[in-house]
Image (cartoon, rainbow, N blue to C red; front, side, top):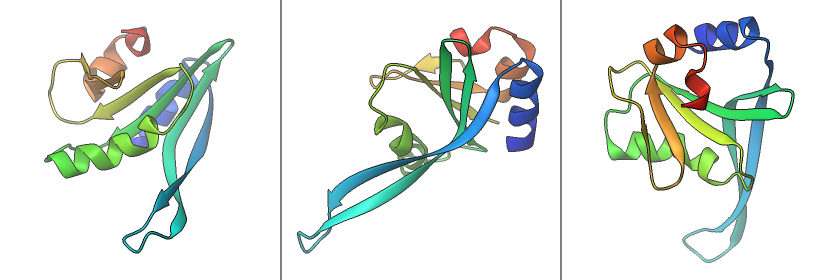
Length: 114
């Protein structure tokens, strides 16, 4: 699925990169540790930028939190999107993260702006 998303972004003219978000957290013993979270795609076109996570399926809350964690830790106002294989309606959560299915993404050229 990641290859399909990558090819579609390139076809739409985006520059596509992979990103890492670093976050400092305390472990169970109270020690300060640094965690790195991967962002599947950073798609840029002119002054537009989208952070995109590809998730085959969000079967439970833990999987959803795992996919959202890297997006939540980004401290800018560009759009954050999760693309899934599951047939779902497009929705935006309280963190401003949009979730859509792969078909909505592929069939609508302006889907990233919904």
